[in-house]
Length: 241
Image 1 (tube, rainbow, N blue to C red):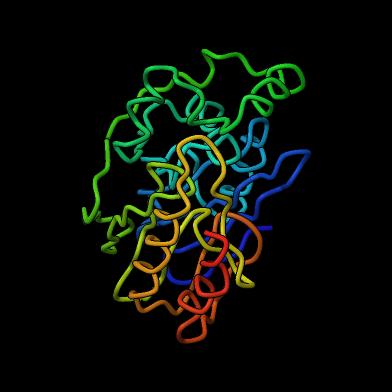
Image 2: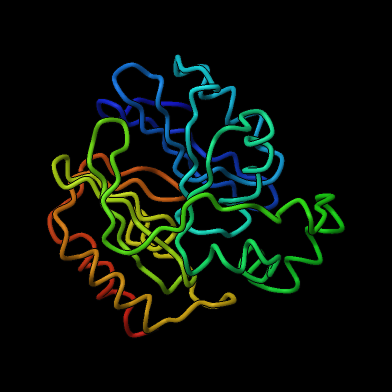
């Protein structure tokens, strides 16, 4: 499923398999010739994501960059498939995860040894497939001009060390990856590099933002976010964190 959410903001729903497949968000300028993908998706989903972009009316050759909210397999896995089709596109990752990714430390990708072993045996993944060059290492509080709009990078570790959100203050749109979802759900914090206290602090940081539209890494988007939603969510979870 593909959907326009706002002017220049589009949603491509993840297609879950035996492993979840992340949602992808497309940020487009008015001409449609400067496209940003926020996250890529699971291994094997590249063709679906690219076809979805075409169905939205865009040319895949106009993808200029893929920005990762974090580098877990369900978000990063099909980035090599997309980059093979659009070799001039850049990969942007927070600095905390860019270095291990470039060095081939796949703990940041798989999160746990059991998932790594299963993926190597059942998904035909080879270690070198995920050895990717990062073109830009993002930092907290950077401002990015994407699709003619200003988006702020918010470093929100906890689910993984280099988790980021993208926040558009003028439209009050938040893309938080797997840190917070709809329906008062949050991402897990028991994987490699995760930290429950950091996750809690990140949620409280996000709760300070004015958010009208929440575009999470999985499940449904929230096109109308009630006031205080993120703060209410973290208060429900903090006794476990």
